Image (cartoon, rainbow over all chains, first blue to last red):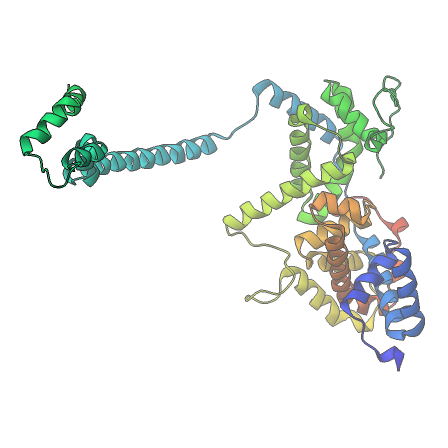
Length: 178
Length: 235
């Protein structure tokens, strides 16, 4: 029955590698075991080998007599002229470069206009916050000034202003403004 | 077909660190290093060593000897232009055939962009059998009654080779005619050795499927390599 067993793709790959002497020792032993027990494998390896030998029928092509001379001359010519770039390739690449540069310029202009318009027309909440930064920063001092040390002895608003004046809080703010 | 070994008294093996880098034992690598240093004769020697091998592989790939020579020349030009940056990291032949394979791939891509007819793809397309497959079919119709002569057999084998895809064909040519190992083919085709193993297995399966009827006819005797005539036909 062994002769009717179909060969797996792995076995087929190994058969070819076996013929080419490219199998490791263990795989060689395994494939020899398969060959010993399978007529299919023996037929397969025989056909692979004989069809491979048929490639010997292919014609042998040789370079023409002047090939070396022609090649060496073109090498020298290429060295004198530098790398040969066909004009159409230069034109095509230049056109691609110009189109690319144009698109980059258009995108950059659109980006700038968009940024400028956004900055000019759309209000920014953070700007108001920045304007009141000094007040926000000194909020603790204002709270301290408004909170009486003795709850029964509430201060007048003018007293609060005087406290601020004494602490030079407003002067600091004025200095900042200046 | 092997490279001409040129002994170079100027190259001192120890001085060049051959003991550390086995690649430097390759005489063609040493020639290339001399070419890198501006030695024109070394490069001319490399061209002489490899021109037949490159033209042979390209002629089988393209089925056109003139185009094969043009492409081989382009490979040498690229090698020459790249000589200043050359670093010996692999056998020279491996490096050269990697460039050759890349160039052949570029040519195929360009041809594909121009929507030219691709001669050899593995399966028949929607337009029916490709030229290579047609030749085989025509020959098959004649086959049972007689033996093939040498030129007919050559056409059949060429047609069978043309049915392989480009990678399979390149791998077959490098293995059969350049006697490259799987590892060297892998380096040339920028694949892993196990991928090369599968590639060659499928290629040889395809060849076997096509050529088996001819093998059975006992035509193998006509394919002895000693009977070959160089450049009998540039397809």
